[in-house]
Amino acid sequence: MNYDVIIIGSGPGGYVAAIRASQLGLKTAIVERESLGGICLNWGCIPTKALLKSAQVFEYINHAADYGIKTAEAEADFAAVIKRSRGVAEGMSKGVQFLMKKNKIDVVMGTGKVKPGNKVEVKGADGSTTELTAKNIILATGGRSKELPSVKQDGKKIIGYRQAMVLPEMPKSMVIVGSGAIGVEFAYFYATMGTKVTVVEFMENIVPVEDEDVSKQLLRSFKKAGIEVMTSSSVESVDTSGAGCKVQVKTAAGMQTIECDIVLSAAGVVANLENIGLEETGIKTEKGKVVVDEFYNTSVKGYYAIGDIVGGQALAHVASAEGIICVEKIAGHSPEPLDYNNIPGCTYCSPEIASVGYTEKAAKAAGYELKIGKFPFSASGKASAAGAKDGFIKMIYDAKYGELLGAHMIGANVTELIAEIVVARKLETTGHEVLKAVHPHPTMSEAIMEATADAYGEVIHL
Image (cartoon, rainbow, N blue to C red; front, side, top):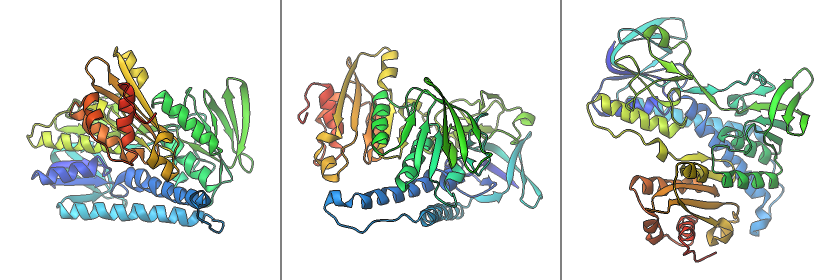
């Protein structure tokens, strides 16, 4: 079988690239070893949001009296919550199957491996081998849960994100190692469902990639929710010989032992580079990533790589954007290279976190003179009416030219607000223009205007 483009991996990088390639008239095949949609759709972004929604509904019911509603005591059916999440993921995977048929993309199930001479070898579940050829081969094999030497996953007591989504019963207690997006989302989910949660973070702040003000606010919100947080701490060992786990945690004050039912390792993601033919094809890697140029060409002509296996943020929307740019370049178009400093990051714990661009610390380090404005949701009419006053919006501008350098948000539904900032930065919008763009009232979004007004000494509602 000969194609214009073969893509290995059908996650949000791979399947999006396949659809765009087909739209551009390229004969396309996609190779997938497990389920269409990859980890994001089947075991990541989508089903976790379903779990988090169930937790949010449970939280609403438990606080119904705050809204003047009387209810009987709510009880979480943990198995039903998990079942709903899996149903959402399955429905989305079927949606990708439909899109493959609609766009006349050949789906080849099996484990793909690149070979020299523009070839892909696919090993089926039954052991059979098929060889495909293409002028262009795109690697989009994604990532998996990173294993720490001191926290070896056994899939039962020490688990990764995948097992955390389908536990047979709700644990009474859990230690989560790492407080990036995966760690804090599961911390919120399990704590809300009734598990006693302890988060252990090696860095000084939780959600360490975020602006420090955001990290401090999430810490306050988590403590209020009963989640214990240990920063500047590391898990040295886990003893699973007894009924549960004994976790040895090294802190500034010395060693501590925490007993729990389950340890969730959420220390990040590692790229899937093993056994995909990189060495025999001569494709260069560096620091656990495939080396690519701005249009995702690898060191070998005709071979490309996108998504979690290349440098840049390991996010679904980044992989999709990279896939589109990659195939548009293959098709002879002139796409603009991706601006990695204008990629929004979203974390779906409660309160939600959304950010784009420079943090205050990074902007100062880059030599900018800053105008910074903050608007707390406690001063927002919509947030007060919704009973969601935790959090704020922080806007960072260059004092000299008014360039919008970054935005950092924590609060209810802020993941829906960040796109305004991404578009504004893409259009090179200034602080003055954001300030004079009339925002609707009462909305959470007007806090963007108010925070900008604060930066320029014109804030009305503070």
